[in-house]
Amino acid sequence: LVISSRGRCHCMDAGVKFIPPKQIEKIEVYSPSQSCPHMEIIATLKENGEQKCLNPESKFAKNFIKNAQKQKRSLG
Amino acid sequence: LVISSRGRCHCMDAGVKFIPPKQIEKIEVYSPSQSCPHMEIIATLKENGEQKCLNPESKFAKNFIKNAQKQKRSLG
Image (tube, rainbow over all chains, first blue to last red; front, side):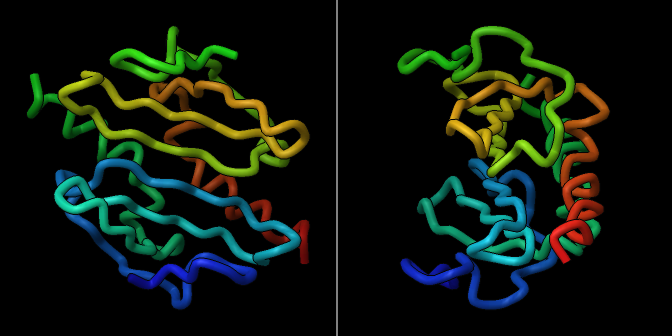
């Protein structure tokens, strides 16, 4: 777990660049704020509820919503 | 508030198509699941903690992470 329970930012490092979309239950995107100067993205995994930081600079993060929408069909 | 406290999906309707990024504290993106067949995006507002559903089909939602990153500079 790379998420600190207290402190300024949630993520301790830049985070991973990719998580298979099917594994993701939800993501939380925190805007830069006074307590943390950069955006943070935290993904919660379906299987075990594990939380992972996702690098906001990654292409995957930038297109996450688009990526996740493509997935919809597979649930059809 | 358009968020139901119980039930299958969080959002009662398609949601708004735009929220000024500066007003957003965080967004939560829920993947389609067995309890709700479509993606849902819930934005929490800085000012009052109000939660609003954001339309996942909107251009704004699709580019939210990119949009929010552009903002970073303004906090410089």
